[in-house]
Amino acid sequence: MQELHTIPAKEVARWWRALPFWASLALVPLAWLGATQGGWAVILLPVVTWYLFAAIDAALGLDTGNADPETPEAHLAWYTAVTRLWPAVQAVTLFGLLWYVPRAAHLGTLETVVLFFGVGVMTGTIGINYAHELMHQRNRAERWLGDILLAMVLYSHFRSEHLLVHHRYVGTPRDPVTARYNEGFHRFFPRVLRQSAVSSFAAERTMLARRGKPWWAPENPFWRYAALQAAMLGLAAALAGWVGLALFVWQAVVAVWQLELVNYVEHYGLTRKHLGDGKYEHVKPRHSWNAAHRATNWLLINLQRHSDHHYKPDRRFPLLQTYAEEEAPQLPYGYTLMGVIALIPPLWKRVMNPRVKAWRRRFYPEIEDWRPYNKATTPLPR
Image (cartoon, rainbow, N blue to C red; front, side, top):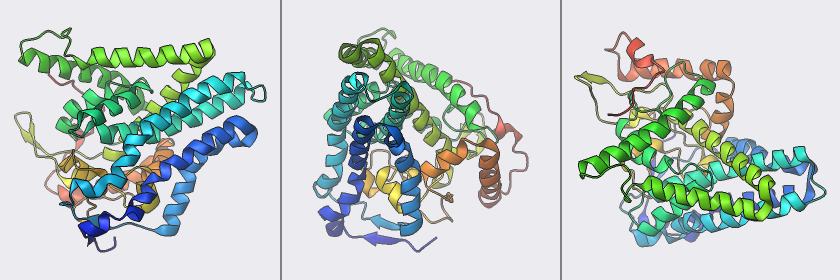
């Protein structure tokens, strides 16, 4: 890996440094191009998201620059603007397409299904990722924007699961989202859907119980989640009836699948050392897979600097730090291309299992029996 270098705060503030992180907006015209033209254009969204950015990664190489983490909030306006703007952009795009596509005589059924598959790739890759950034902030308005984005993909409980379960238990058997060694994605996906829904509700119920309140108390965010999701479903039905409702649910399913594909990549096979008596070591940079691929980091607003996110969860994305391979494990490709590889379990294991084994030898040479860490079943948080 190339040598790391620091970018001074005054340089971070330059508008042109923030501009590449607005790359997500380029996906919106592709959605409308597919809707208005049909034919081959309906596949543009997944092709560009998965493959074009990987090709640009290969051309531009790695980004090993770290912004000064003490950069003032005021210097980040050009960066935060895109995450605050995106919920409105996504809402207009998604619901505009729901109104337009069922009325478009030039689009066949297959074209419509493929088009909304691409929309789901966009709402999952960009929308949920931006929701992830927003829900970690202290600003209440930003957290609401995150909730709105998650409601658009019917996955509102992700906020509770991520903040209360994943960040606390990552790299342990109590985290549903940590993919076990040798667990293929097609086994991981149904497991995480089932367990994260249960664990997120259990975490909120436990928090309410500590305050002497029942799970049905108005403070339970699941009431807000349900109301927002019902509103989204109602709007979809009002715009295009049962067809609009079906297309909305379809893009939501694809978006959640896209999210969990990235979750699978982020922590596959990486576990925190068990210290005995149910305790684990503190989370360290070594417990997340990172990637310094430049273009994919633009698209995913530095999500690939995942170790630093777990170290400072509320740190704004432009200030997330990258690490050398001696501190944090590195992937051979960016997250989007690694997600495509994960869809082919034999290929994934050929690429990743040797890297997990090398990670174990480097960081935990004293552990000889890894079988307890390899279990693909997850006890739920108590």
